[in-house]
Length: 373
Image 1: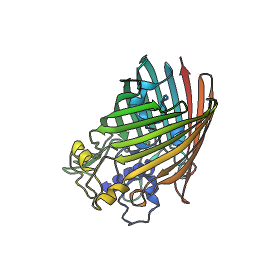
Image 2: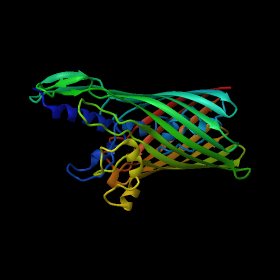
Image 3: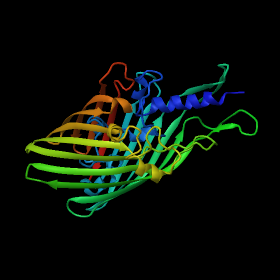
Image 4: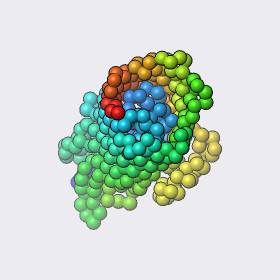
């Protein structure tokens, strides 16, 4: 008889090392990290190279084909009639060589003040070998996760817009495996659920050379996800992101944009009631940490960066991501470049962790885009 815990550990290993919270693995075994964990954490990772190079900031960044991931409200201010972008990242290549993150996104204008988009986030976790309690091979499986999304954004004035998105999420970490006999065998299954996003976006020229953008987005508001036939269900990474982008034109050919995002997961803190409903978890997440207000502040991640454009043809980017040592301890610098030529664009990003041995080291992302008028 196969041990139930072995399958759970295998699925956890895949999920943990695939997630955005992988940096927490660098803490010593047995250390109390107080890290907030959820199912399908890949939903919180920057899939496109532009925002990845800016420290994973993007909720108020100027809209492009990847806007729906960050804030669907930005679709109300897109410039081109149509745009499509594809992004790819070899994932955790310091550890394994068969994992990758892919993202395909595009939008179409419906009017001068509105647009609709569709996107697919696909996470390939490579191969994993399941074994029994004696170490014998059971089966080999290829875990995969994906999220299929649609979004709509509408400008309500020349400065303000609203947006909403919906997505179907499938997380298949272990397939359909039955372990053990008796009246209650342990069964794993793919997790399926749906979620919505709600965002707002504000953009205003403060002077001839200065523009201010503000954005807010609550993403992944959806039902819990289950991986077994038991009662255990996990929260999605519902998160609140607030951010700003300030763009300054040095002259007609040179511009600088400064971006800053703050992000907080709206799920129960470690030690809080994990059986509560999704809506209850959202509202109590602002005050359920055992350490009080100081611990709640530790659950806020910060992303920031600088983007330089020359003549709308060449871009250079740099950013920084910060997470509290008590909540995962992810800290990394990001760098990137971008090129635009006529209808085409290409971006690349490179991640440099602040500490040695981080499995996120040398993570790269690439994006290509096609803009049509």
